[in-house]
Image (cartoon, rainbow, N blue to C red; front, side):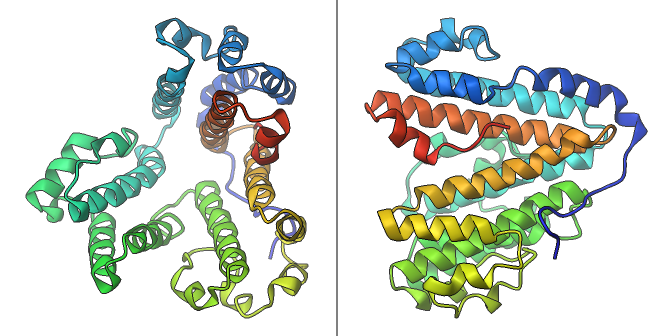
Length: 335
């Protein structure tokens, strides 16, 4: 087991131009000081004004009101994906990154099929298969047109639902298929694969904590994701009071020691979610020392997704008149 973060790939000299572009763009990402100023804004309209000189400024004149902030965030997300696709030298790398959103769309469409409702609004445009194409596949029930890993996800998602008639089982079954694929040998980029392996560990430990906290330990073994670094079964029988101690020799000890203490004191998972996000942002920052290779591109894309998440939380908090402290409690660190 690694001490803080797992190592990743070797340098690739053909990424010199791409990394140079990314290093310049990183200077425009929101830093802690800018986020702090956004938190001080009195309302969502003032947040928008404070973003005028950032990458988001170009979209602001097109918004009907601050309530339409999602349009701005989606436009910036689309720009980040276009940039990633432009700079990535291997088509496979783009495919692996976009695959996460294919699995998301599979979840949406299975739920739409089961509920007999149109959930088109929830489809992501960032998968490898355009939303209208994958929607048509489901309407025609031509799942053989999907790649093998998505066919498996569809089969598991549908069969899992009919076992208990529980829509939540759809998400879990598809997520299990997603992490099996994204952490497996099919994804041959070590940095990207490790990102999902770390994420699987954190989500599994959160699942253990959450189910123990609400007294539903019977659900743990059905609710875990494959592909993490930990042998998670070693921790499922540990009482919540001593769970963080069992994690002492893992990189996740500090996260769950502080997070579980906060959960005990406040009855809220907010601090634990924040610490998990911060840990993954820290892994992305490891690429700051990489001179040449695809890792800075991946890190910038996920760093931008983290930034968009921060802005969404700030906008929602301001719209619903939450205090600065309430918003900040859950806010992840910027990249």
